[in-house]
Length: 83
Image (cartoon, rainbow, N blue to C red):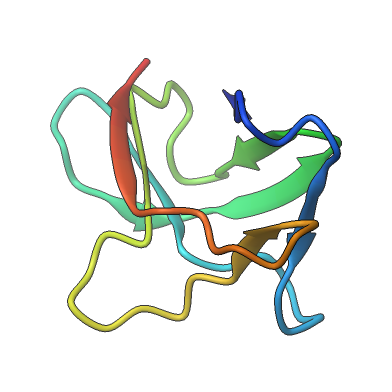
């Protein structure tokens, strides 16, 4: 789970499609696209290919289809975190 501190009013998907741009990796560091769902100001990520995610990243590419925005329409910035 990824909690966004400045999204108290919620998060949205900019284009109405599935949430895109999230990837997870195990300890080895090989990132794979993952399913992500918004729950208020939190995004839950899940991958059938990575049983114990160690790293999560979002929008981590030169060109990305990342589509997470706040209710004000401002896009979420790319990030990489260690769980």
